Structures are given as C-alpha cells and as structure tokens.
Image 1 (tube, helix red, strand yellow):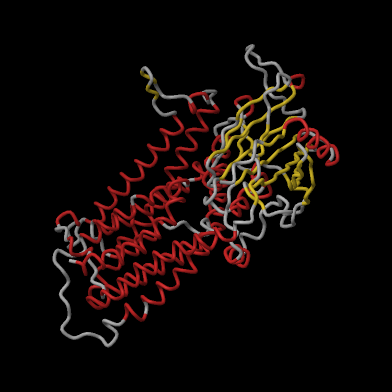
Image 2 (cartoon, one colour; image 1 turned 90 degrees about the vertical axis):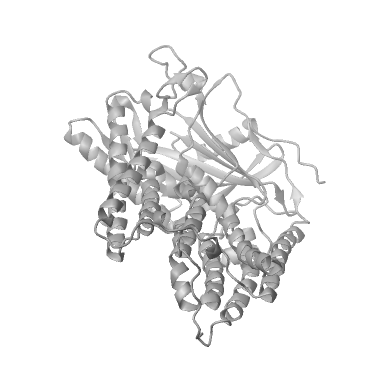
Length: 551
C-alpha cells in the first residue's frame, strides 16, 4: 500500500507543478481556457487505453528497468533550476514547453520500465494530447492573432462594400460612418475557435478510434470550420452595426427580474463554439463509417491504467526533492527582496466638475496578455471642449480637440512577470488602429522623461503617433510596490530576452507587484506641448496613497 501511494505521489507531484505553472494562463486567457478540461480528457483517454493491464513481455530490453534512473534522476534535478527561473518568469511560454517535456519524459520513462515499448505505445497519445493545453510561443501567438484580425476585418469590409454599404478600414478598426466603428479584437479574430477546433478534432479522432488518415482529415476540416464560423459571426455582428442596431450587441437579449441574459455579442460567441463542436462531431461520425473499430464508449474503464509502478527509492527521492525545490525557490527570492523598500501606490484623480469622464471597455486581448489583477480605462476632456449630445444626454468627447485617456493596471506580488508589459507596449498595439509610429522609430528604445508629482520623481516612457496630421502622444510608467534604495522606477526592460530572463531569476528579480499607468494625449501639435501637459496633469491629478506597513 505504501509503495503504491509513493508511486502515485511521485507521478502526481511533477504534473501538479506543471498544472500550477499553466493554471494562470488557463484562468486569464480565454484562448487557453480549455486547459482546465484537457487534463480530464487526458485521464479519460488513459482509462480507455486498455480494457485490462498490458501484458508484460517475458524478455526485456537491456534498458528496461533502468530508464527511470537514467532519465528520471536528471529530469527531477533539472526541475530545480526550471522552477527557480519560473519564479521570475511565470509568463515565459518557452518554460511551459521545457516543463512539459521534462514531466513527460519522466512519465514515459516510468511506463517504459514497467511494460516496455508495447505499454509505452499504448499510453503515448493521451499524454501527447496534453500539448493542446500548452500556450503557443508568444511571438507566434500574437502574429497569428493580428494576421487573422487583419484578414477578418479586410474580408468584412469587402463584403460590406459589395453590399453597397459605406465602410473604411483603419488597421483592424472598421469605420461605418454615422453608425460608428467596429473593432475586430482577439475574440473576433477566430483564434479562440481555432484552439477549440484543435482540441475537439484531436479528441474526437481518438474517441472514435479513427484511422490515421481520417484523423488528419478531421483535424484540417476542424480548422476550416472554425475559421468559416468565426467569419460568419464577425460579419453578422458588423452587419447589425451597419444597420444601425449596434446597441443590440452590448445589451442583454432579454431580462426577467434581476436575471439578464448575455448580450448578443457574447451569445454569438457561444453559438459559434457550439456550432464548431457539433460540426466536428458530425464529421467524426461520417469519417467513422466503415472503420473496423468502435468508439471508446464501448471499452471498459481500467483504473489500473493510472497506476504507474515506480521504484520506492526513486519515488521518495522525487517527492522530497520536488518539495524542497518549491521551498528553496521561494526562499531564494525572499532573501533577495529583504532590502527592498515598500512604496505608496500611485493614483490618478479625475473627480472634478470641470472634467467630463467616460469609462472605456478593456479589450479581452489586452486582459489575456497582461495577466493583471485589476485594471481600468478612462477617457476624459475639459467640459468646455466637449460637444453637446444630439438627444440632450451627457455630452460627447470631441475627437477633434484635446482629450486624454488613461489605462491603469495593477499586479499583486507573485503574479505575472513585469516583463509581460512588453506584450502591450504602445508600439505593438496602437499601430493596429491605423496610426503611424513617429517616435521612437519601430524597434528603437523610447525616450524616458522625469516628472515630479507629490514630491516624488516618476520616469515615463514617451511615444508619438500620427494620422492625417493629427498626433497622439503616449506616456507610460511602471510604479512597483517595492524598490531598492536609490533605484528609479524605470520600465522593465530586457525581460523578454533569454539572458534577461535568466538574469532576473539569478538576481531574484521576480514580480513584486505594482501599477502600470499609460496616459495618452490626443490632438496636441508638438512633443514639447504634450510634455508640458503631462507635467501639469501630474501636478494636479497624480497622488500617492500611504505606503503599506512593513510587517
């Protein structure tokens, strides 16, 4: 009984650390929210892998019985530096792949020792299926998402023009004249449906035990289905907007008492997901016609498949070493952070009668990229600059006069790495709206300026964009919860390079929490005037709360 318990712990503990690492992305990024169900699907496939335990061969290969030591021990030891690096870089997607390969290698080595290649081949697909829960490389993910956004928005504009509706494309924003603008965000790019189709098609191929060729056909059919369904959904939403019923997109379909149904935009997303699932299910049934295998439903579930025997000595070593790894990593960072000084939280105050403020919805793509705990986006303008509402409601912000927009995001300690802010730098997202970057030139480091507010110095990065002779200036800073004495609040840099990430782990520079504040000023004709306006804003609107206790 004790040997069985040790074997379970020795396998479960590495997989639990992998789930812990991936859990943040699964929770925050809708694109990978399916990750929570993938382990359950993997277990189901393992339970159905055999009706009875795989028979052990009477003759063993020379390596059988030794792989757990030849591969397992180096893998377990390697998890120590991996976990330390993870402490400073929990958002590093390369780390997810390395972690998965390490845990998979350990598991497969144990399976090989127990039953040889025959057992390993039987269990291989369920463990490889887990790959669908691992986030893609960030650069690839962003490029694919932005490419899909551009293609979807361009296709919608072409369709609207063919139907003789007024439409103009600015980046990924569709201007439909008096009916406003349509933003093709991450959800409308089709990337979420693409991810869902991959999971469903791979699982259905295994569930119906399709031949290899049929599985490939189902996989590519699922991709095409997801892209077409998303395009149909995005065009439908745009067509409703063009017809002057854009209010329906963000309003509940119906309400009964205190209950409100989802809005049409979200409901269409659910319908799209359901349609993708049903289509792939139907295709799976069609492809299964004439095949010699029945579905996994007809097979018995075998709990013994989940038990992978491991030598007791190795199991004890694994449990003790990995437990010590978690505590040692945390102790390493705490030791490096002892000399850091708590800072007060930066705050922006806009509750003045002379200002007209308007809350802005934060795109889901931004939420998924930044992994913040809380955030807000506010647009404001002096009331004398606003324009009256045609129906006598609150005034409207005049897009042709000076106005500000602030985006504030807060991280708690131990959360996503501060380097994650690089994924949402102004030069990577603002050009998608059709603006051209003037300063700094793409790829160059932005200039940093020093601003005083409430007797404190704050360093801001500066960016300049232009469109049709109008300019947009963006200033952003990161104000951490803790800093070392004499260290300025410089924006995190170098975190997305390999050496930068490794150095941040060695130096104990994990995320201690803080606030990112981005301030955008539109319709100012020079950088000197924009900086003057920023200093004026900092003097009047920025303040600091009391510093936290140092208990």
